[in-house]
Image 1 (cartoon, rainbow, N blue to C red):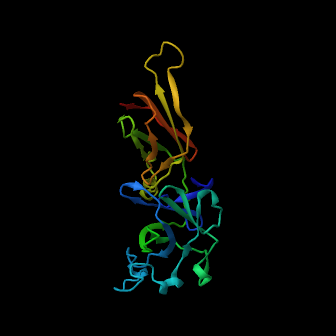
Image 2: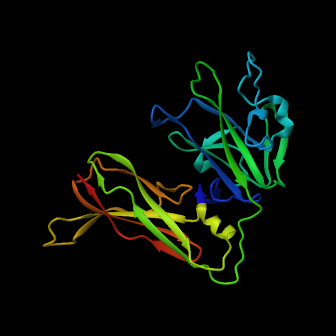
Length: 294
């Protein structure tokens, strides 16, 4: 399970349940870089009741000052609302703020029993008794404080009844991992990608259960990088460059482990990379992958 300020949460792509803590992330990229907008004004949560379109929640009357934004006439239909801004280390269970966890990276946590209110206290509610199905998270952003223009960005997620499955025999899952990059040019700062492929080896498990493994299942991902020495005649044959760490290690919806590595201060030569993660009662340690900085 993922952590947000050391509190267990479930990312939107990891089959979040109606009663758990669902992490809804929002990455803001402008001109090819992660940047902070002037202000994240709000995040509205609505149910998807329009066959995969969120237009019904927006003011689409041409010429109006609210065009393209969430229509206030739908305040009574809001499932949850976030507006205050803070950093990740300010998050505590039950908070209804928008939290920043890196440059251009923000998140809200949707959880059972969370209280929320619109600006001015016009509407007040408690997020509770959520139902399964698809939802929208609509982010209202002010890129430039000076011009005051607001823009909405719309993303989707789905809530499930729970993440519990029951089996009549032990689950047999084989995980194979592969490092995508083989060569990195010195002075590069790149995302290293370690892909994961899971195979359920039980013959009598239904396809519906096997399909669960199309979502993220890996937890507690960590990485280690060592520099292999050319001269092994004395001392250790390697130097640990990145000790085992989970800082900056992310897992996406395909169970690809991602780590952003800066090679600016690194020597040219051969490096060795390994990742670890957990799944059920298994601690999965990948093969040792060679990576050349050239």
